Length: 83
Image (tube, rainbow, N blue to C red; front, side):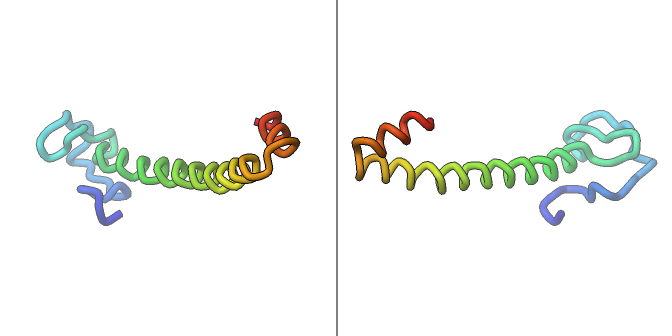
């Protein structure tokens, strides 16, 4: 994780349960891991899942909307009823 300030897998017992400071913005946990770094790693996973979900929504929604707009009539009604 090259963009985090501290390695999230490294345990630093001397730094355990520190309060927020300029070095550790959100403090450290009981193993001495930087909480801000762990949040950054978790955010990376959450953003990746969100981007995949948006991609699937666009990939399905745009063709269905274009088909309904181009054909109209029965196709438009079917797409409207499915949504």
